[in-house]
Image (cartoon, rainbow, N blue to C red; front, side):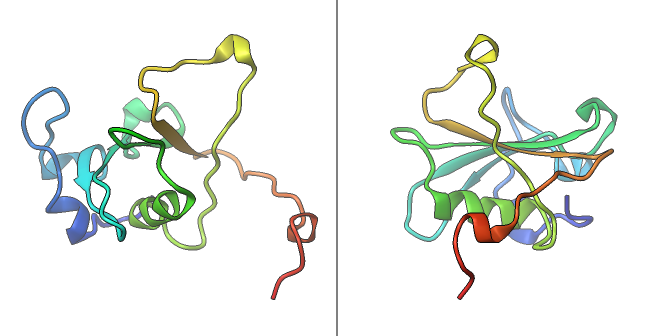
Length: 126
């Protein structure tokens, strides 16, 4: 995760209520964000403190639909540097947890590299 909190995140931090945090939480907390396209998103971040148990995590939700690929990329770039890789998992059905019907998650382990298949498996680069 980024070492510094971008101003666009800090300005949109939820400061009161169930998810309320202040600047001392760094990237941990909840943020109401308006990406290009205009659908309000809620991003909830684990940050990188001792409570994250070795994983950086950001959940992203919209009120009436799942976030789009472009919205997830936009959020990814707010929390992580461009060279950092994060993943979305599809666990076995027996491990499904669904607390919100329109929520997606991004993960990055702190103690290992994420293996990545060759980009050619997706298609040729332009």
